[in-house]
Image (cartoon, rainbow, N blue to C red; front, top):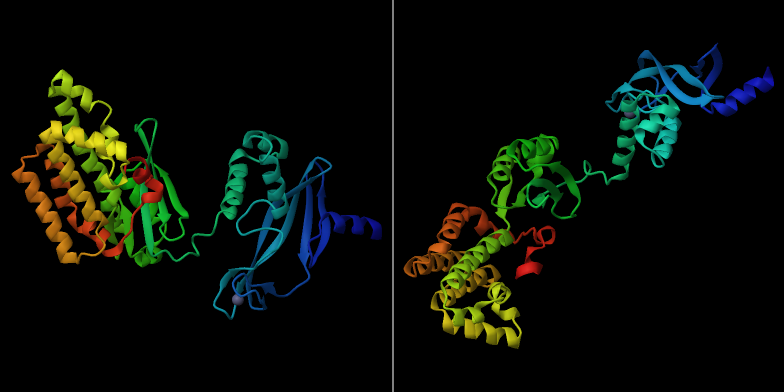
Length: 373
Ligand SMILES: [Zn+2]
């Protein structure tokens, strides 16, 4: 008897419990009887004697000689002096789990080698339980964002399937850690993802850097009551470049054959910032500009507005003046291809100006500046 008990102890090394075999048939049921009158508080870690009641629990443990094995025990409900009221902490099973911690470890180790369905068959647990165990494990590996104090967020969309499908990534702007990754980019999806952070966290978010995309804007305005919106400057740059490129395409289509030779393969030269061109590219640009007045004007308008975004010395009022000057240049030149950009900038002006106030940009995720600027 003594030896058998030692064997049992060895197989079920649960400290502080007296063991007994309650059933020994198709299943094995092991009874754990606590030797302690107190329980450990999960919040303060102290022993707590104030036990309100006890709940009986049965959890699955590792198989014994291919027979399914269960543990039957009582878990204390505590009312601790630290203010905690709830179940005691047990070291062999987590709160509200149906299997022991060592069973979870076993499941996770199998899941690294085979499909979850196969794991479910081997350990004889339902697939959903396996999935939950594995998900919790993966979650435990991620940095605990719930503990992070997030002051600034960045929201990026990532196009997949050639722009037919979108991901949205919500990041902590300061650490770069992804807080949420969601499929899609609708208002509902974004609002739901933000809401899951909880009101307390959302109230601490003071800045959000994002594209001029109305569903995101609406979601942030509703969910983050204290957040200032900062529109990503590269989104504006992209729209300006698109306008310039549409001028180039139109002029190319209308050009005489000998002029076209000059204009061919010049997209890159036009879209690149002038200061970044090498000598050969500068000469190409000069030739192009001499031969096509409209394209030249469009190019200057592009350079004019993009240089505002580089402006680090002007006052806030001067920045606004520079934008106004740009708006009127477009109108006086009747540069219709730029009208939509002007409308966009005017419509989202508050958030674009916040770029100059707070200097935030999603550049790293966007990668746009390295491609075109
Ligand atoms: Zn406590």
